[in-house]
Amino acid sequence: MEKPRFAALGMDHRHIYGMSQGMIDAGAELAGWWTEGDPQPIEGFIKRFPEVRRAEDLETILSDPSIQLVLIACRPDKRADLAIKAMYAGKDVMVDKPGCISLDEVARLRDAVRETGRIWSVNFSERFEVPAVTVASNLVAEGAIGEVIHTTGLGPHRLNAPTRPDWFFDAASYGGILTDIASHQIEQFLHLTGNEDAEITLATVGNYANPDHPKFEDFGTLALRSGTAQGFIRVDWYTADALPNWGDGRLFITGTKGTIELRKYVDVDGRTGDNHLFLVTNDDCKHIDCSDAPLPYFHDLLVDMSARSETACPQSRTFRVCELAIQAQAMATRL
Image 1 (spheres, rainbow, N blue to C red):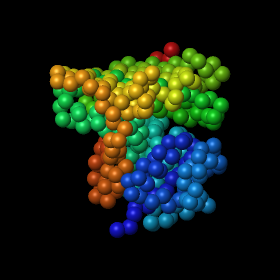
Image 2: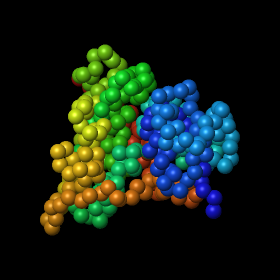
Image 3: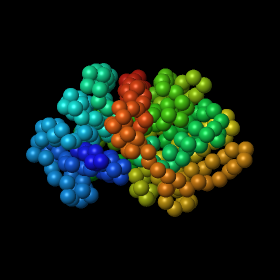
Image 4: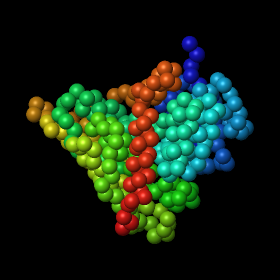
């Protein structure tokens, strides 16, 4: 059986590295890549995948019937149009978050999925590329902490301002901090609480530390609820230089019979490595090293491409997460 073939489109964000490697690890073949211009992440992409050739133009990839999937990590305000073009060319699509930045784009993407039958999947990497979330998801599904009634998701990031392109500092280009980063935590809330819809009850954004970039937002919060569950999310660009990675991403899951805490990327001044899970129930109070847990998203997406199923992530949820993030951004009080 031949390997599924995919191509990478748009090198504007380094997330394209993990997206590509995840598909390769799942058994797919990277057949080529194309990007507009020469954005800075190209150098890292070529270093990681030196044997893969750059296509002369976009049409070379879209017209190749052997390429079944395209990965998109171009500038956020261009992702929806490129994804729609790819779907009408017969390709399934995995796009970096935010998959889109306006409700009009969501509507046009829905139309494209309905009319073409293609898959439009947003790679919410803070779940799909984090082994600790795989373990937490399994524990929740097994009922280890009872019914999940609350999640708290924290998404701090390091700014690295000198390495960022101009569009990164303009909310009109990247969608704003809630549309962008908080989409991760919204998806985790729906996934872990077993809900497919929610209501945003509070949203704030602000720019406290970057006055030289007045169109940028470096801080955001939101609250949401669905059924018996509630959630709180805080995202920011304040990771200080001493931290050994880009951010101390954390997830707290409160159930009726226990709690789970994830230190996804670092246990500050504690255990070495990443993917730490702390489980507290009536029977256990322990740390679980999740670093070797699987990442089923990429394999499941290949299954979905073959079976036309929705095991990686329900299509309706992907759309709803984008809508909720955009709605939160639109209603946010600017601090």
